[in-house]
Length: 385
Ligand code: GTP
Ligand code: MN
Ligand code: MN
Image (tube, rainbow, N blue to C red; front, side, top):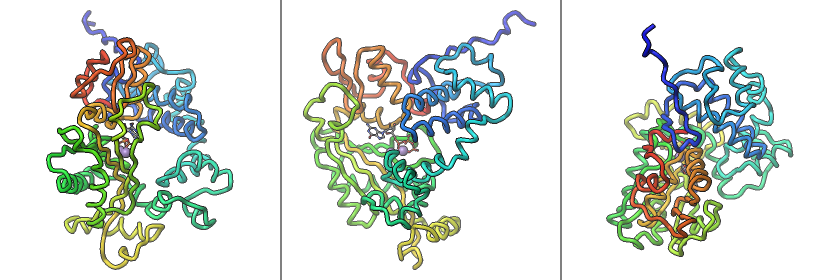
């Protein structure tokens, strides 16, 4: 053998925000099972365990090759005893008995179905599970008391559990652009979330809105929402102010201008275009046979419900908001952990606070935030941890 033909050692950094994680990787046969266990841990409100499985999966997503044997894993960080046991079983037998029995379990399936209802979190789903409920239809049959979000969630259950395509996201982008430009000329709108990371489908469409003139964005959300409502484009919306102050994102109290942070969780009524109506008929009639059933469905008009998140940020916080709403969730979590544990800083979607210097660090771009954090810049398409 030629002396130089040694496989170079892969340097795998400890934090996901130090690594490039592409959307398409080589080890789904291992990461999907690990993420089932992570999800199951979330259902039991065991956050530590869930994070451990997610970190293991993220390391495997960043590997440039398919894992074939256990000894390829010996120098990798984040792989705990439990994850290694699961990986070993899959490499040897093709499947993990723990993962398969989790997948099949009544509790996992019911929790998946119940948390799949928009507006239903793990706590509520778990209470319903213990009361014997297993599916959204059980909620209807037993006449459960539901809040407005949950009512919309049950009503549009099938649509909201049908992945949103990039094409649909683009149609919604056009609508949001029109709405925002109509009520605030000069505003800037960007697509965030999974679609910004290059995903082909998503569970919703996320937008971040700002205006170069600081303060011009104030009270913008109600105007956007009114415009959309007047056009009959919304099936549900809940607008929130001040969500940052209630969140557990950052330690230090933010400057007072953060009170302006506004966001809206909504469900859009998306007209299915005539062009692809042939391919939509099937999906549409499938939907109307279940819990989605407004009259219009049966009288010819074709539309579907799509979850949309809108966030308005002051211009001075736009870079932080962009970084914070691009994800992935694990990538964000790792950025904040890196900031806190390695840099003595506190990062949120609003600001970066340096505890040593006791001051906020300004940034006009994501690149500048990575630089403040002493991290190599990772583009959105490589944040799929
Ligand atoms: P899919 O929508 O499932 O395709 O993936 P996604 O990555 O777009 O997930 P999601 O829409 O749930 O979230 C998008 C990004 O917004 C993620 O990075 C989240 O961390 C972030 N995010 C979601 N909810 C909140 C929130 O309440 N506060 C903040 N600051 N960020 C949030
Ligand atoms: Mn999203
Ligand atoms: Mn979202």
